[in-house]
Structures are given as structure tokens and as C-alpha cells.
Amino acid sequence: MTSSPWSSEPAGSRRSGGSRSQPGRLIEIVTVVLLAVATVGSAWSAYQVSKWNGVETDEARASAVLRIESSREFGLATQVAAYDAATVAQYAAAVASENEALQDFLRATLVRPGFVPMFDSWEAQISAGQTPTNLLADEEYLDELFASSDALDAEAGEATVRSEEAGANGDDYIRLTLFFASALFFAGITASFSNRFSKIVLLLGSAVILTTAGVLLAGYPVA
Image (tube, rainbow, N blue to C red):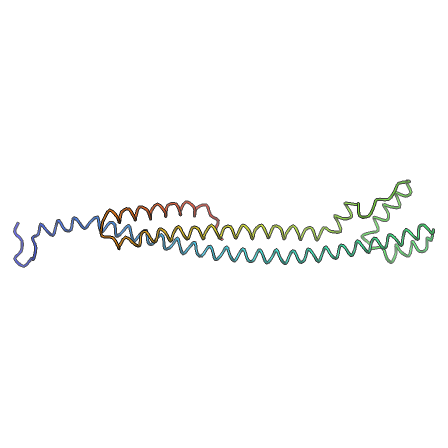
């Protein structure tokens, strides 16, 4: 077949040139795909870093508030314990002086309603010839008195743990962002090379990094 007189090169030459362009076209397609995946992955990782940082801040703030409330409840419980101890001292003095009227007055006006069962228990122990339980050695009394403070402190500890976990998750996504950025770099510089082998090596490196990043991403929690 003869070439057209209007053509600058033979038809066979054009066919062979088109054949040689197919691998180059494939490399371009793969490059675009890798760049797209790396860009989306990098953006998603950055978004997750922002979200987890927010969770970390919120949980840290909640922990601080709970610590303050726990300290307040602890202070109140300590004051109640001091009040109960003072009441016990006055009641003991009334018992020692056999002043029943003062005993009745103390029970009716000064003793906390929640502390009355403790008095009843002591009186039963005294009647049985036993030594009353030391106020500060009574685990049941102390547990009830400081229950609110202990509960708030436990909640604060849980919030602290959640804050630390959120911070660790954010760090993981930061590292993942570096993976995607590396893959983006390797795929992006292929245009700077004319050698087909160099481009293939760079694209393979980008693909390996993206695969590793994908495996890691599958195991990370989402905020």
C-alpha cells in the first residue's frame, strides 16, 4: 500500500508509532489513578486527624471538669465526716454524763438523718458489751460518704483514657498521611522522567506504599 502524496511520513510509520504509544498511555492512566487514590487518601487522613484532635480536646476538657467536681464532692464529704465526728464527740460526752435529755436533743437536732443508723449500731454494740466501731475505720460509712467523689473520679479517669486513645488515633492518621503523601510524590514525579523503566519503578513504589496505607487504614477507627 502506497502512502498518500499529502502525508509527510509513510502509513506504516504512523502505525508503528501508534503501537509504541500504547504502553505510554497505560502508564499515564495508572499514574492518574494512583494520584487520585493518594490525594483522596491524604485528604481523608487529614480529616480524621482533625476529628480525632477534636475528640481528644473534648474528652480532656470533660476529664478536667469531672476532676473539679470530684474534688468538690470530696471536700464536701470531708466536711460531713468532720461534722459527724464532732457530733459523736458531743453525744459521747452526753452519754458519759448520763444526760438523756441532751442525748435526745442531739439525735433530734444535730445528728444527720443519714448518720442515725450509725448511732443505732453503736448503741447496739455498747448494749452487747462490745466496743463501737471506729468512725474512720468503718468502710461502709466511708464508701457511702465518698461514693459521689469516687464515681466522678472514675468517670474522669475514663475520659482521660478516651482522650489518650483519641490522641493515639490522631497520631496514627498523621503517619498515614505521610504514607499517602509519599505515594503522591512518587506518582507525581513520573512526568519528570522520559525513561519508561524509571516511570514503572516509581509507579510500583507508589502502588506498594498505597497498598500498605490501605491495609493500615482498614484497621484504624473512624471518628
